[in-house]
Length: 112
Image (cartoon, rainbow, N blue to C red):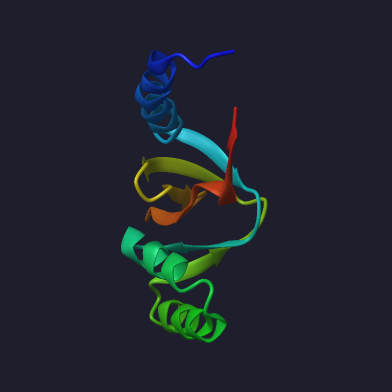
């Protein structure tokens, strides 16, 4: 079957709408224990060094010691306050917390 050129265009238009709608005011649950950070830039930095174990460990220690990032435990219920398609991240707010924290989309499942 030959692919139709407009199929890719439709996907490229609909995908951001789907992810954006899932990222605003939804309930979620952490699939795994994951780092969540006050700034999306910290998540980017962690992703950039993830293949260098020594650098990753140093960065995690530094960010957690400075209060910039924290571990959010598997199963924690969160409110998804926003997201970034470019970065593949959600800004989550664990129940009872005031601040929104950035984490990777794959760490969170949407709860309906």
